[in-house]
Amino acid sequence: MKEQVKKWLEQGEVDIFLGYRMVEGHPLPHFFLKDRMEEVEALVEGPARYPLEKMAIKLAEEDPDIKIGLLARDCNQRALNVLFVWRQLKPENVKLIPVNCCPSQLKEQADCSLLSQPKTESQKKSVGIDNNMDMDDVKEFNRDERLRRWLYEFEKCIMQGCLSCLFLQGMQPGAP
Image (cartoon, rainbow, N blue to C red; front, side, top):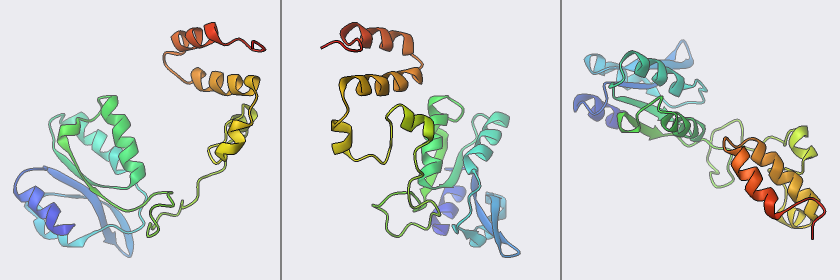
C-alpha cells in the first residue's frame, strides 16, 4: 500500500493522497504529498471511520482538476459512486486503494464494526420491506402487499410520476 502511494505521488498520478496516520495512538486523516514523501511511511489503514470522500469534495471544490488518491472502504466506494453521478468529483481524477471492510458475509476477514446488517426501519417494515427478509417470505406476499411495496419504492424515485403512472395503468389494487 505504501509503495503504491509513493509511486502515484512520484509519477504525478495523484497530487494528494488521503489516508490515515497515527497521532498519539489514534489513526487520524492525513494528506500525503509528494514534497513530504517520507510521511508515507506513517500511512496506516486501521479501524478509522473518517469520511475521506468528504475531504476529497472540499479539495475538488478548490481545484476541480486536482488528482486525488484515497483509502476507500466499501462504504466510501459507494459514496464515491454517488458523488461521481452527481458530478461532485470526477472519476478520472480519483484513484483508490481498497480497504477490506464491509458488512458482508463474503469478507470474513473484514475489520468493520458493522459486520451484520442493521435491522430494517419500522417505516420500511410497515410497507412490507425488509432487507433481511428471506425470499420465500417475499413470495408469500399477496397482490396488495406487493403493490404497497412497489409504490413505496416508487415514491423514492426521481421519476416517480412517470413510473407510478405506468405501473398503475396495468395494476390496480384489488384487480385480478
